Image (cartoon, rainbow, N blue to C red):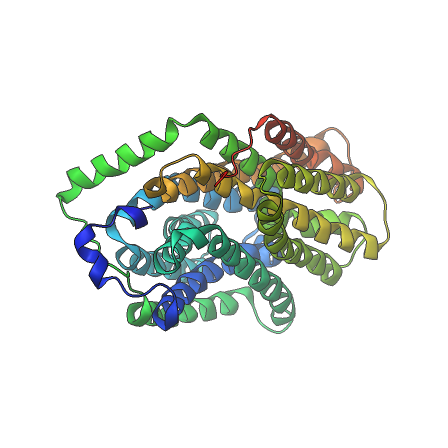
Length: 423
C-alpha cells in the first residue's frame, strides 16, 4: 500500500489521522463491502427459488456462485496495485456502479447465461471492495491500525450477513426474490450518491503516466510480492481455510443442515450462525495474535476448531441445537484465515501491503469457487452410484472436499514460520 510512499510535499496537506472525515470515508467503504457481501451470501437463501423458477440443475446452482468467485479472484489480483495507483475514490465509485448494475441484471435474469453475466458484473466491482476498505482504513487511520481496521471490515460484513440472511428468509415469505433484488438495486444508487459525497483520499493520488505506466507499476508491485515465498504460504492456508466457509455460507450450508432433518427456517438460521461465529472470531483471533505476539499458534488453534466443527456437521447425527452450535464454532474457528493477511503483510514492504492482501484474497476466492462447485458435481456422481437424493449419505459424500481442504490448511499452517514483528 502507498501510505508510506506518499510524496513528502503532500505531508503538510494530509488531514489529521482519524476524525469525522476519516470515519465517513471508512464507513462508506465498509458499506460497499456489506452491500455486495449481503448479495453474495443472500444467494444461499434465494438459490432454491431461483433454481425452481428457471428450472436449473443443482450443478448449475453451484456454478453460478462459483463463477462469481472465479471472476472476483482474477480481478482481485489487480485491486491492491490499482488502489495504490489511483486511490480509493477513483476505484470504488465505478465499482459501486458495476455491482449495482449486476444486481439489477440478476433481478431481471430469465436464463442461466444471464445469471452468470450478472454474477460477473458484481464480481468485477466487488473485487476492489474488501481490499479497498482496508486501504481506506490504512490511509485514514495509519498503517499501525491496518490489521485492526481490516478485522472491523470483516466483522461488519459478517454481522450484516447474519441480519441479511435472516431478513431475507422472512421477506421471501411475502415477496418474490426478484422484487427483493430490485430493492437492492435502488439501495446501490443510494450508496453511490453517499460515496460521491463522502469518499475522499486523504492525499490526492496523481495516477498519471497513461495506461502503459499504470500496467507497468501494477506488474512491478505484483512481481515484487509474488517473489516472497511466505506470501504464498499465507495465501494457501488462508484459501484452504476460507474456501469451505464460503462454500457453506453461500450455497451448501442450508442443504447440509436440511439433510440432517432441519426445516428451512432452522437451516437458514444455522447458515447465518456461520457468519455470526466468523464475526465474533474476527475480534478474538487478531487480539490473541497481538496478545501472544504470535501468528502461527492462533492460526493453528482456529483451524483445529474449524476442523472439529466441520467433522461434527458432516458425520455426526446431532440434535438441532448442537448442529447450530457447530455452525457458530465453525465460523469462529474460521476467523484464523484473517491472520493470513497479517502474516503476509509482515514480510513485505509497507507500500506493498495492499498488493499482498490482494494476492491472499484472490487465492481465497479461487479456492472458494472450486469448493462451491465441487459438492454440486459430486451430488450428481453420488446419485449415479445409487445414493438417495437429499439424504445425509449423499451430503457426506458431497462435502468430502471441504474436509480435505481444512486438513491440508492445517498441514500448511503447521509448516509456516513465525512472522510476528519483534519490535
